[in-house]
Image (cartoon, rainbow, N blue to C red):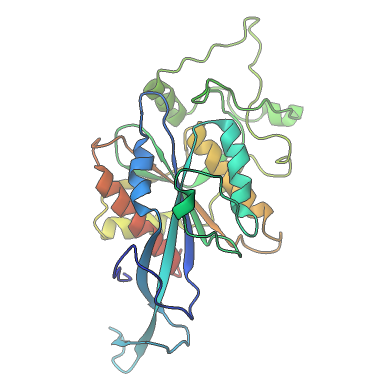
Length: 310
């Protein structure tokens, strides 16, 4: 595992491009005056992590380490920095649709916040990783693998619905109108009851419409989530698993939007240049404390930035 030498310091590796990472958490909603996801994300604001990565031919400030397989073979490492910026996103569909596309422009555009004056400048060529974090119910951490285009029937923190989407008959007939298990849990957690149309007809389809017509109903992250989860378990983060259902609420909504925008900003023949991932955390001390979640986020970032398997 790469070594973390320090934080909140200026870069000392001037001739090696740093990794640029954006981590988002959510603002207040429901009973959370301060969102547990933001409590875990905020301590990483403007953090600079120092890691050693395989040099791939670079020799500046390198060190050599014998490998287990062949003592005559050496691994050459070079120091590299990971610059982390954080962003709090309001729990509304409107804000997600307004904020996320700007994160993938060149250079990225971040909305003005109370921390804007102290934020690291967005990298001109874009972020290497955007990691979204949101709160779920009691239980382990959940690393999400897929975002969904439709099915957003719960009101946001301002009491507003996701946009109504015009779909073809084929799209309208696909998928179940019954909520998934993760969505049921989300509704129960929020005390949310969805009222059907008075005339008994199917409720309108809500989610991503104009501007997202060409994107599929599900978008999977390019990150090898199973390998990441395996790595985290081996590094002491035992309470974590991968998930295929982000809940069809704002967490799922920002994940799909981010995955779609990462693909929009990349030529169709290429793999997206920005890795995108979503992590669900539990409420504070249910069972993980805030510091434990922050540490899991940090370990995830290091692996995602430095592992060839990511």
